[in-house]
Length: 223
Image 1 (cartoon, rainbow, N blue to C red):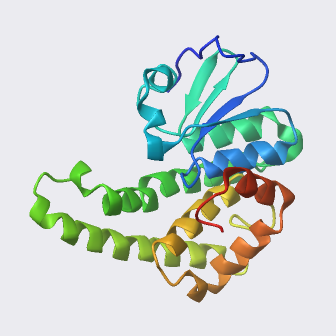
Image 2: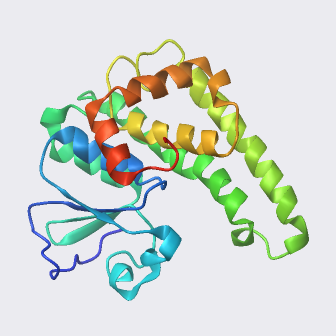
């Protein structure tokens, strides 16, 4: 989805503005921008204080979600689209494969992240988005947690002996994968039992861009 980006508040046409919230999936796009080494502005938009529901933010993203990326007078939403834009706009960072099929495999993996484990995470904390009957909320939460754990095991198997999520090369898929590891830990899941995924997480934490963003956000899932 694209919308006209606000022209007030010092937004520059050539410097991307990322709207993020600590602990949210926007961590992925935040890390990817940092990895490029190019100038950008990170704008904290606290979900905990409903800043994503203010008229000012809804003018940027009417769906009231993060991340959102304002660039060149327009707005890109959804991690999959933002991460793909970052990798495409800054090819020197080598955040997506040049091979077209391998690039599409990366995009497919990111789409799965957003439409499967992310949905289970949402169901755990917002069961009212799925049903109206409060008496089944606990059942939905329990099923969401077990299904989320199945997804974590699947990610662990997908990494396997690979150096990174999609193979030998680091891509924008890797910071997106880190989001779900952090959520799993915060949800009390035994993430350390997942050897490949835990190795991936430790490798991520060694990257300067990852450490810089987590420190900047004071990210609650990686303290």
